[in-house]
Length: 281
Image 1: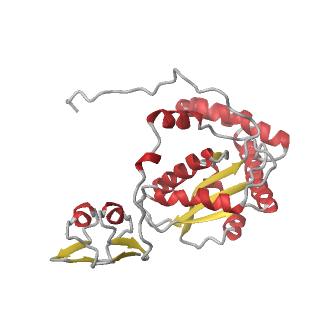
Image 2: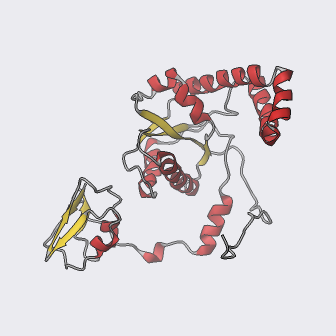
Image 3: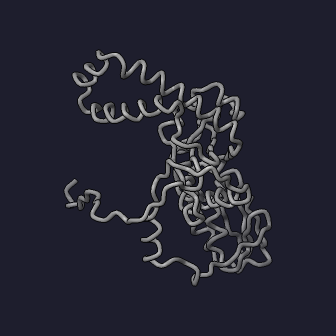
């Protein structure tokens, strides 16, 4: 929790000003926090010029702006980031896995009470793969083998026809190789949270992206299993394996490993459509 050393406080009021939960009050030279409303966003710790606020009495460390990346370095990092689906068999040390996950703490979130499960046991990863593979088999059997389903999608949901069609070869390849993963990752990360808390999905994705980028700087490839988390949440085996409570849900899944294929080129020319506000909404 956030702690205050009022003997250090200079009364500037920046912590009160920045608090978006309005749970910090200043009474002359004393700062008080209403912990019932505090979301532990830690903005107040980050803004305090005299380091009077801290987390569990661990004194914050001032920024070293000389270490901040230049725009050209960020350009290189962002454009190097690709989804990795082919992994080497090399394991990732637990200290490095822990180091990667710690950067999820610095992501902007709404749900501040998420937890992380790291799976790095080969047997458990194989068990997860079997569950995903069996789902692929059922999906193909019921949605792609019957020709009537293909006709119905084309007739009643033409907007979904492209997504429906492009999933077919992926499922066929999975059935051909007898597993869901093209190659097994060294580890999998599951972000778990209470499903009753709003914006948990968005919070999990922010956390995931922080970890993705830091992993890249360590030579680790990542694959965000966006579609698979829905199936994993429905699996009683997975829920038991991860010891999920009835009110909990998997909000993000990431596979990590050392890439077996190296990307060499930055893709240029790809653009996102931009529309400027004309002031007449």
